[in-house]
Length: 111
Length: 113
Image (cartoon, rainbow over all chains, first blue to last red; front, side):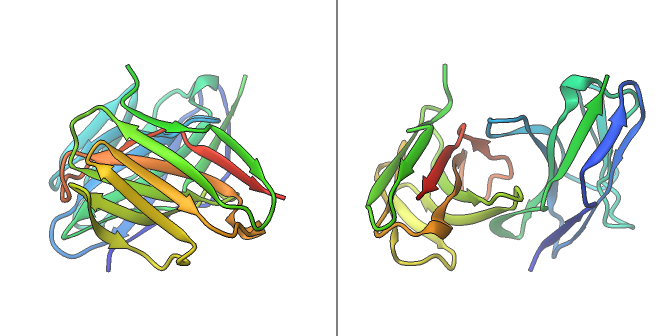
């Protein structure tokens, strides 16, 4: 079956630092890849997505590129803000209709 | 306009009680889901309904019973609540069963004392 592995958190950064959250996956076929963000006390919301190899998803300064050769979809942002503090989930969907989420990575950004 | 709404937002109850959580979506989606998120933020799918029909039923105690009166609503009833049921429960919807993107509700924090 499908699986998603995310780096363990929490990730603690100072404001304006560079962010990378690693995500790798195993899947049959050609899944779509997602990053969801969960702000404190809220539900998950889609941050960005990529539906085929080499696609780059981007939103709010965050980017991730669908790397089929390394089965990865790492999330990056050049300069984080305090307001980016949240839990980030990598997810895949495809083949089986059961969506698969990673375990989430907590990001804490200090002023 | 709220796309996926849940009630209540907080639910505190005693062990052994029966409780329900309601979910409604106004997106016109065909598929709805229930997830359980534990204290470590791990998200586990419980159920999925497509047009009022059950299509996913993961390994969940039969004390949990989903009900979908129409495709815009998916309620979760829990019998004989246990301490381990304490978690945040999220409802979500997607356009169709194989649609990759999901839209989540704000969550219901259930605390069993």
